Length: 303
Image 1 (tube, rainbow, N blue to C red):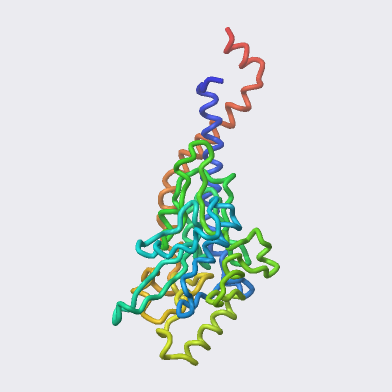
Image 2 (cartoon, rainbow, N blue to C red; image 1 turned 90 degrees about the vertical axis):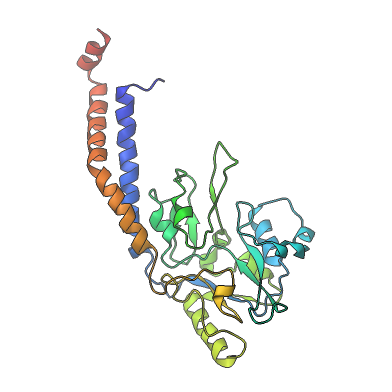
């Protein structure tokens, strides 16, 4: 069917509803993501991580990301290069060094942090990203329009995109194994397989208490900082490390200052300017659709 003026106005009406709904979604982010003591999280203790990469393999298997077998993840040569999560790897382990002794090597797992107040959720104009009450930030590909604002907004540079899929590309990232019935307390695949218990799964509040207990009991083992407890309003994945976090994978971010406070100001400023013309297109589209089945209108058009 060819696109005529009437079709165009109808499409404009649908577009206006979609975009305005996305704006409303951004305004509701703060209400959705109020701190929930029952939400789950993971504490990563980098002092006991041995870089075995079993977490990478378990994640790969859980989500059927590649056809690589278990032995492929035993290759430690990957530590020679810095890696980021991709569309085929929701989590990766990288190596970092002590600034005082280059011979001291540590390893750290990174993945989506599942922020308490996620910037990706706030930036998404159609509600394809959603923060659940149990902690995970999940993605609905049916709603996604491919704008990739979530990728730009994420301070951890986590979401990846299937650029090589021209038919149905999706945003890809760690799901916190939400599909394993996380709300019932079932642990993520990476936590379940960790042989050194470098990953501890529990409620976020309990993990914060556990982290501070470890800091108090072993002041010489850790730098006195629980990363993710307060950064950008808090994250579901939190870290303990033997050295300053500026030497690790994790970016230096402000504490108690959620990113959505900034992304929403920009987003609302942009869409506020478009609200009137979009509403006008919507109204015109509605009028044209109403007249579409009017016999007099149809006769007039045919003559």
